Length: 294
Image (tube, rainbow, N blue to C red; front, side, top):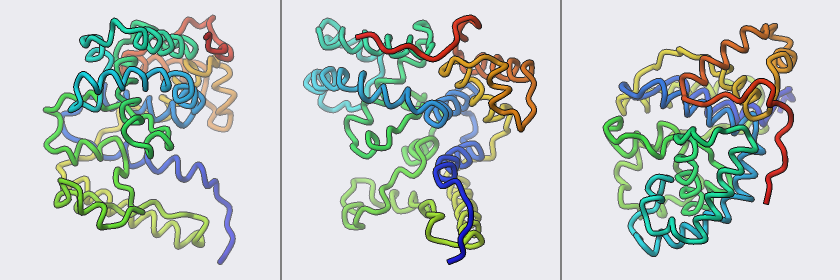
């Protein structure tokens, strides 16, 4: 096989964002779209925030989740507001979880008043709790709290923001046991090809064919091509500024090959932060995030 140069990790990381940014359901607001872009950028640009979430906050959440299951065994995904309406809020376990959650957010310059962000985190942790694969992947998406009227089917909701929801390496008979196995069959899309196994031409052809199949899949579910009102790179700038604590000048130097000016980056960061409702940190509060207090 012919050898060729590639950034394997970047190829795999970029595939999800490409699929996500192309198609969407009509009626989904720019805010929801933007928040998903932000979460995807956080996972890609600042994976340490997700890793710390798993190691410091998730263990506290497990104790809370066990109490929630005792109260309501039928419900498996909880947002913060729903948790606060349950008796769990008066427990020591919830107090410890809540404290760690907000300390984690504070470390990475997430304002405590940005309730939409903190409300989403327990939903992500709920998914980790009930699915080991999500935990292993450190799946970090926004979308567990979408208004139901935005979606015509559970299958559409699953695929909108979670990517390939089916474990394609599972035995077929295991999939057949699912309650919704009939609709499940049409969800299956070709997996991302491994660039280590093919020459460059074959790999690119497989990616092109996969993109066409994916697009047809989305169209069957009623998806349309979404207008790109905001560039995905602007969300990367926001993560570098807000989470990483970089200045506009440092971000401009980071992307020196693209020759972005400080003013361009500042306007991009302000634009997408206003879109998603994220309170920007003060410009003088930069630098590397401090260690999480115990």
